Structures are given as C-alpha cells and as structure tokens.
Amino acid sequence: MALPGHAPAEPIYLDASAGPRFCLFHHPAGPCRAALVYIHPFAEEMNRARRMSALAARALAASGVAVLQLDLHGCGDSSGEFGDARWDTWKRDVALASAWLRARLGMQPGLWGLRLGALLALDCVQGDALPADRLLLWQPVLSGSGYLTQLLRLRLAGDLLQQDGATTSTGSLRALLRGGSTIEIAGYDLAPGLALPMDQLEAVALAPPRCPVHWFEVVAAPGQPLSPAAGRVASAWRDKGADLHAETVCGPSFWATPEIAECPQLVEATVNACREAAHA
Image (cartoon, rainbow, N blue to C red):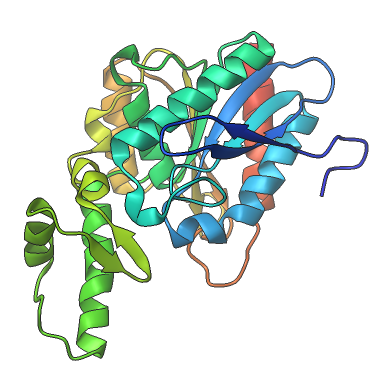
C-alpha cells in the first residue's frame, strides 16, 4: 500500500546470472534528493522485517529519497533456491542494483542494510569496490563468525530434539561446510559458498569509506547507549576516519519477533537522518 498521494512501488526484474532478481522501486516524491539500495537480512529475519522495510521505504520515498528494495539470489521473488545462494553472488546482486538505480536517476546511490544485509553492504564497499553515496545501517551484524555460530546452534538444537547424534558441535558443522557439504538449518539450506565467506567477516575490520554512515540500533528502553560490542566497532571506525553517526531508538526487535512488529521511532529517525544529510 502506498502512502496517501504517493505512487505505489514499481516491480522491477534485473537480468543477472542464474535468472532475474526481483526488486521494488519506490519513486521519490518531488525532486530526488538521494537514492538507496535496500539489502534485506538473512533467511527468516527477512520475512519478519518485511513490514518495517516497506514502511521505511515508503516514508523515505515520500521525503524525496528513492529506494530500490532488492531480493538477493535465492531469496524472496528472485530466481533460485536459498541453497543456491553464494556470498559473492549476493555482492554482485548489490552492485547490479546500484548500477540500475544510478542509471535510472543519474546519481550515485547509497546502501541501506538490515542485520546481515548491513554486513554485506560493508563488505561491498571495501576498497571502493562499489562506490556508495552513503551507508544506512540498521542493527548491523558485527561478527559473521558469531552470526554463523548462532545459526549452527539452531541446527544442533534441532538434532537434539530429533535425538540425532550425527553432529555434536558447531566445530563439526563447520568442518562439514569446509568439506563442501550443504547444511539444512531451520528449513534453509546453507551452502559453503555462503557460510564460509560470512564466517570470515568482522565489522571492526570493515571500516566504511569516507561517506556519511548512519547507524541505528534498536534498544529496549529510551536513552540506552550502543551495546559495548557496537561501541567498540564504532570507536574503531572513527579512529580510521569514518564519518559515522550512531544513534539508538526505542522499540521491539522486529527482525526477531515471531509476530509482525513495528518500530515507528526507527522509521522517523531514518527519514530525519537522510533529510539532515541532504541539507548538509
């Protein structure tokens, strides 16, 4: 559903390897002030966050920021199965979406990532491999290794429920991945080409290039600061010259809750940050 007086999102299919990638293009209302490629989170977090990403994309478009919501290979309405997904393919998908948006609007877009999508965005811009006008990070995953460990623990918990003793540790599951095996986790097939590159990424080592970076963390109570881990990453980035603006907002962990949840403060803060950056 579009906001009152605003055009609905336009479905787009981008030609890519192994089939098309589905996107939704949110036209900016009035003169286009900026543009963003949205990179969704991983697996079930993507589904739980659909409502919030749609609300924010519409609000940004209404404020003059064009948004292209991208379904990565093997996800959503793009081609392929989840087990076909590879980290390098996802990086090419982001570059493809960025190039399409730049050609459509005549301006360099930025990247907006949620959770693992934020870590993917940071990896994409390393070494200026993919120029970005700005980075918008929602609750970024700080450690690919730690995130993978959480996923593997879900598999171990499932094995325990099924009284299946084939795997006994996250180390043994990592060994299976290194040996070329695909692992099923909570209904998703996780291939080595996706898991192993993710396992090597740490946000502290992925300081963004010299573009504005807006980082938003959702906290349980008003006024809470960044978590200690996030604070350490932010400090390391600033030491390397990052133009970082970090902020916390109060609301539910909408990417993790079983029921669909909204965080209006996050949407409002995001729109305000983009508006302030445009004025600056």
